[in-house]
Structures are given as structure tokens and as C-alpha cells.
Image 1: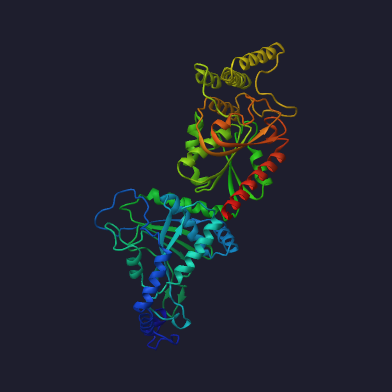
Image 2 (image 1 turned 90 degrees about the horizontal axis):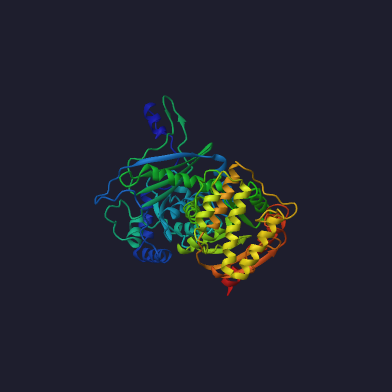
Length: 552
């Protein structure tokens, strides 16, 4: 266009590249190639690829009107260039193009938002397959549908492989007119919808270059949508010095806050990169240290991506009064930690109680829970002492008492409760031990082994969080979990029961007990290396069993 305008101003013929084909030639070829027989064959292949295809839609903030409106607004944000480049570089290692990488990230976000078994969306292809038509002006572009199965949670590596296959199959049908495709897959456009498919994705990196002519210049500017035919048009723009994620949406059915949250999550997925390792969430209690042991375990176990989960009361997580409330909150936040299964949950001490309850809730939501590993955690028991929970809470949060005294009283109320459950002999033995400890002026409570120490003090935030978690654990009501657990138990620590499974066998299908040396705190200090080794072996054992089961 610039050359033609410059030529008109200069009263000369425009100097244009020689054309070896025309748009009319292409249109005649396409019409001849897509005979009824060929088209029927292509659409049959398409039906096989989309045999579970249903119109994919996100839940809207407002109900649809009978008549579709093409109103449009746009939300955009500049992506961190280093994160975006690392993301596409990691994807290339897995054999995926930048388009496939960004598409996979979009599928993750859409799957989380919709909780659908499949994500169906469309994208556009240029269809300029021949060099001869690269310089021809004409509407060669076509829309193709893509469907990705997200029914079983999977990491980005597996998702990238599936997206690669989906894109390759779809491009084979790039010349089939989309109106035929849409009618075959989705039928008539639904009332209140502008297009057969409600979500479209575009990855853009080619732009018109700025150009100077005799008396004018042509400069490239950001495009502005004149309207929208779908609910969401998500697009990623790659420029030499910046990356941008944008979304055109219909404001009649979506709030801006909803779109902003989608873009937030998209940005978060990209910032995390592509990690081929399976995820294991580590719920640490932070009772005895500042969580450094979780980082040490993560560094020691290279085969898995250990994700430390901060306890409530630390950072931006509010302190909650019960284990059930903590578990509910974690499940609500799983989109930020691990949005889809299979899940592997590890928990230490009070963190184990929380991990157990999170696993139970995930099972109720029909999510896949591969493994639950509990470390130095005794199963909760029903109360037999009247007002036991009231006593524990009244003492635990009474600042008049020192942390040590509060802990001692709380633990021994729980020990007395368990002794009463076990019978008169156990009760008499417990009272005898307590009296003997008082006579000898020893601390009545959780014994420490040589070299161990509780890293907490009066008035310290973490100390108050610690005693709050202890009280929540002691007052927790048990629930049954329809699965298996592995209990790692330090044999030198004081136990509230003589049972090897520490009471967990009544709450689960099966308990595997793995003993390790040391006291209660040792796995987080002097024996963190041994704990890492045991965790690694336990996780690997689960993976081998899963592989064997698939083979069978």
C-alpha cells in the first residue's frame, strides 16, 4: 500500500514484486481440491479427533441475553520478558513451539476456571503454504478448532506433548472451511452466543514494519478490536523487546475483575516455567524452625519438585482456628500450588494432620490422590474427657502462661484422654508417670532428645503460631480417608499409644509404617538427610507401582 501511494504521488507505476499466482487461482484450486468426497473424508477424520466435542464455555458473571452483542473490552498486561523467554525455551526442549507453549498455558488457565474434562477453542492459521502466494493480497486465513483432554490432571510436560499432537492434527485440516467444521462439530450457533466456539487463542509475532516513503511514513500501531464474535479472545504478542498477554472479552457477560484474574493466573503459569518433575506438596508445621528443612528436603530430592506449603499464621495466610478450616483454605488455594492432580501430599506433625484432611477433600472432589505421607503425626482421637477441647483452647491462647507451660498442659490433657480410651491400666500408668515426673521436677510433656531444641520463645509470632497449631491438632475430630497412607515415625520419640500405626489404621484403608531413628524434631535438624532419603524411596516406590499397574 505504501508503494502504491508513493507511486501515485510521483506519477509513476508502482514497483511491486512479480506475482506467480493470484488469489483467484488459489480459490479455484481450493474449490477443486475440496470435492464432496474429499470434504466428507476430512470431516470424518475430524469427528474422530473430536468424538467427545461439546461446546466449551466458561461460567459467566451475568446471564446471556437472547440476542448476542459484539460489545468488546480489552485487558492487557506486559509479561516479564525473562519469564516468557524461559518458558518458551523450556518448551522447545520438550519439542514444543512457542505457540504450543503459550497455548498450553492458556489451556491450564481455562481448565482451572471451567473444571471441564476437555478444553475446546479455536485459533487462526495463515494457509499460505506455497511460496508463490506469500506476496498475494487475499483472505487466506482460516479458523481451526483445537480440543485438549484435561480429564486427568497432568504436568505441563505431558500437556505440551498432547498439545503438540492436537495442533499437528488440526493443521492437517487447515484448508477445510470453518463453517463446514463448525456445523459438523457443534451444530447451529446457540442462542446468545456469537460463534460456535466461545474461546479463541492467537499467538502473534509478525508485524508490519515501519516504512518511510517520499513524503510520508507508515508506522505500526497496536490493533484495536472493533467487536468480538466470541466470549474470550486470548492472545499473546511477542515483540523483540517485550511480551504482552491480552484478552478481548464481552463486558455484557464478564466482569473486568474476572478477566484480570485469568490473566494473573496465565502470567503465574508462565513464570513457573516448564518442570518435568512430578509435584509433591510438603505441608510443614513450622513448629521448630523457620521452614528451612522444607527447602533442604526439596534440594535433596531431585526427582520430584517438592513444593513447601507455608502454615497458616505465616506470611499472607491468616491464622485459622481449626484443622478443617485450614484444609478448606488450602483446597481453595490449590490453583496457586498445584491446580490439577495427581496429588502427592506430605506433612510433618500438625502439617500432617492438615495434609490428611486436604487429601480427604480432594478425594471427595474425585481428584486423583497418588500418595499421602505423614511424618511423626499421631492420629486424632474423639474426646472422652468432658470439655477437653474447651480446656485446650482456653490454655493454648492464654498469654498469662508461658509457651512451655501451655504446651505441657495441652499435651497432657490429650495424653490423659488417650489413656482413658485405652482403659484403666493405661490410665493408671499415665498418672504414675506424670506424678513421678512432677516429683523429679521434670517437664511433663513431649521429651526432646540430646541436641534437639524447640526454636521458639515467649511473645514470638512463630511461637504463638506453633501453640495455635498444637491446639488445633489436639481439638481436631477424626475423619475417614478412603485410601492408603505411609507413616514415617521416629522411634526414639515419646508415643501416645503402643499401636505401630499411631492410631491411623482406624481412619484409612491401609497404613505402611516406615521407622527412622531420632526423636520428634530430629528429622528437621540432624537427620534431615535420612528423612530425605526415606521420602525419596517412598515416592519412587509409588511411581514404580503406578507404572507396573499401567503395564498390567
